[in-house]
Amino acid sequence: MTQPSVSAASASAGASIGVAPIPFKQEAPLAASPLGGGAVLVLLVSLLVIGVVLYLRRRLNLAPAAAAGAPRLLRVLERQPLGPRAVLLVVEFDGERLLLAHTEHGVTRLAQGKEAP
Image (cartoon, rainbow, N blue to C red; front, side, top):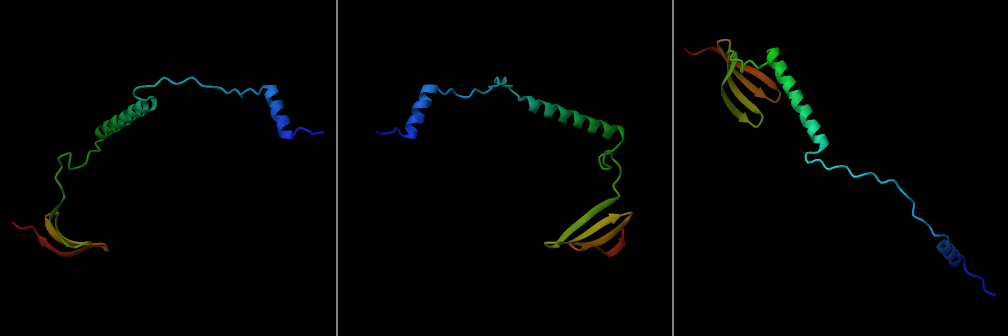
């Protein structure tokens, strides 16, 4: 008297029931856009924002002073590096020349003189 094993019994039961695969929903494939739908939208919005900024800049006269043709108030006449983090500058401001030292700790006025004729 032999009894069939449990695994053999379950395998034969599964074959007789006929296990069907679980169905799932398949979405229809999207049509491939040559430019990409999102990319075109981002490009159009970017161009619109750039146009609005340029319009407001002209309308409110927000152009930089140098671009508007205004005379410059400050000119760097000469620049001499003294090391990796130190610079000596000759700057012209309000008709006077200033000798400035610029380091990582700040800017110091070393000398002041009149503009050369």
